Image 1 (spheres, rainbow, N blue to C red):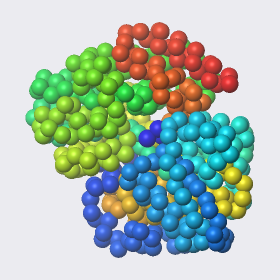
Image 2 (image 1 turned 30 degrees about the horizontal axis):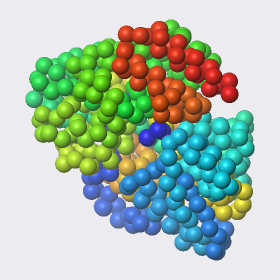
Image 3 (image 1 turned 135 degrees about the horizontal axis):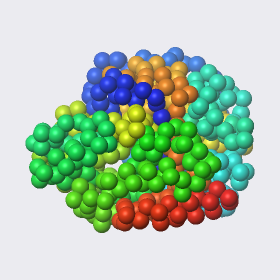
Length: 453
């Protein structure tokens, strides 16, 4: 969740997809005859050789909870079966670099950590916590991953990360009953999005739910607007702090975002209410209350489906989705990802990296639903329904034409820490969207300190 990639021709992707498939979207995966617990159904044949690790105890830390954690544990169980090792899942907290720092200082680092920020991988490498990827895992990467996903896990030319999961973060989910009652249609541009919001508001339903209590949702709002409006080259420059946050392109993006944030009547609870609304609640309040929900739309990624599943709404009927509206020439498509990084030397940790880079491991996770793999060798039949297969194919076909989540590329003190840096400044901006110059100055001040360190 803290976990951007850009697919050119975004409109074509979403025309093909129609809607995003997640856990609970449909049951047609049963037709595939896949064994969802073992990864032995349709998909890639076994193609990874693992060492015998009889009796070795290993640990894997991740911020995943609930169904996501349970599904990942199935991947680890298969690793245990094949190697004889015993693997323990260690629940981690955000920011994960701080969590890992505490574990390392105490002499008890996990063997492997699933790290959801590029910047955090870089920090782990520069602190000499991370161990380079071994030859067996590198072989899986070369065979199964596009160059961009390999590069995202490398620091100064050395491979440290094996990306296991990708997530699409450029979607607007909406309550179909609220839209129907308002006579609203899916907008394609930002201008039309604002018009749709006004139409819904006139029907008596607040149009937009914002989970402002979680600062990462606000960075995703900014990044989608910036990518579409400023373009990928500027996006890369800002992500690497090669241009300052005082750049006119940032002013333009904040000005665009203020067209929404500056109208409290369009946001559930106004700015104050949004700042007290955590991400899960921003979703559930959109899909409860029948045709009179607290909001008609909520922005976020494919993982929204996990939260919709907690309501009585059904994806595809009660809850539908459209691509983030185009501010510039194209709609943006932003993604994040989680990479496995070894924090201990030894055969066991490297074997885990090799396993997580394999199509076998990706298949087990894919069969559970609610997951997209960046592994290009994974047969799309592993996914539980046709819509998710289509989305996975679109992701893979993008190849190296991608852009990763900007805040996840930044040092964690700036782009990934609650109450600090970009998260805090954009929360302040939500409260006072007129102060664009002050917001830029604070962002630049915090970024300069973070990138310098």
